[in-house]
Length: 63
Image (cartoon, one colour):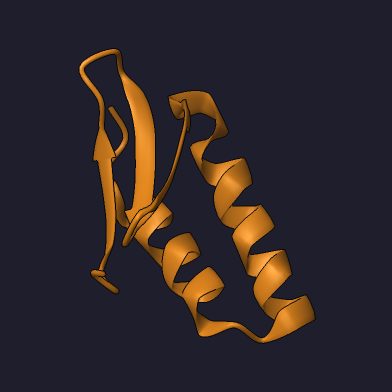
């Protein structure tokens, strides 16, 4: 299983974030609110993967 986080846009224009066998897909306009959610989860649970996902989502250039 890969531990690398990837963030990409789908052919339909959605954003997909994935790590290993897990992935989530959502509309571009929700990208930053998902980043906020992952940061909140990191503050609550201290799981570094949440912070990494937030950073990766913010690093994706706007479409």
